[in-house]
Image (cartoon, rainbow, N blue to C red; front, side, top):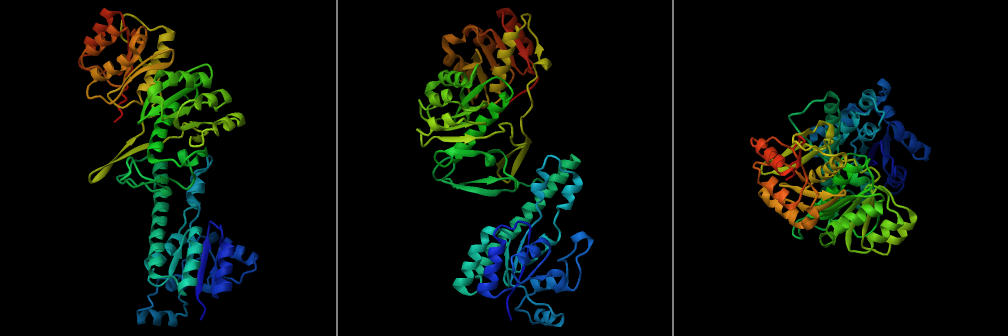
Length: 511
């Protein structure tokens, strides 16, 4: 008797070619349903509709078609058990050797901006997951394929062995269970979002985009995964040129994106990232000027850095970018002349990410025995909610500079201090064990340029020593969260030294 294959797929990539091989080269009989059966019939392939095979019509508008004993009996039967074989013969059920199923496009549906709850519910597959799970459970007796990229390998298995090997079938079973797990996780996450509830469970699934050369260091294996069926964020970026992206590239690119997203609707802005911290950030009248200011803020550290721009790359900016060694550049666009100029730097990775604000909604960090989940720190700075606590009040120009420094400081590793002037970072103190240490680093880097500059701190000042250190360097205004038991001491020191102090009421620790 010919082998029997059940084909019922949403993603019809390669379907007809695969089915043709099954029929013509290996003599399979095919049963199918819905649009899959129509596609096969239109291609002239012999196919039996599921409803004809089961003797039961599709009902409820197609909601029930494969949920039938003749289908699931043929899938679940163990051929090494005489009682199972007897049941199949008694019920006139053929054993199924191959099941090819992928599921309704739920994630693609909910990615549409105008999707309704009713639309989403209709794309929750029932019969498909039941067949996938049943087939995966019984991999000892049949093969389950749930991705078109498995078709050629399956055919090669048949050509080589006459049937799929048990090792191949078990691998396919694993992929099938991952497929349904990811599908159910997407449904649960969507419904949870609709109900605005926080679940007692948290599921994170992804599809591997790329196996990376290594992680932070050569001895650490690493891979890049995409969440969701529709590419977003870096998975949706276009790489125009350059070497493959590394783990460290992607981590630094995300740090660069998160900073430049702060300026998505502002004047031209540029940031340069090194080891996950900004070494130079600036705004300018043009994107070329913004980049030059950011580069000159710390040209030594900029060597080998990651650049993010909030405007399309033009020829002037491209020319400036070619003057030093950089790892990556990302921008929302690029003109043709700039693209030609950058091609001179063949190893430079150039990425286009049209929506720089498309960031993760949650931060996930693994710890021993579990993981932590927190909402992303995506609060938008609002100077109207700030407290102006000193006798000396900021001018409009000083307030704009305080806002710039505050936006940058938010993305510097704690303890974080940023010194800026003319919308350009002059000094960055990052990741020190005490705030005074970070302040000293930032002020020493700024040097004489600290005269008349702004200082931002991601956390409150526990003592007035940082205020006095800043004043001694020439700082004229400070922005910090406030909230210390000794805020009054810092405010008093600022008043005595003639410094403006603004409290934001928001802390931005970044570990």
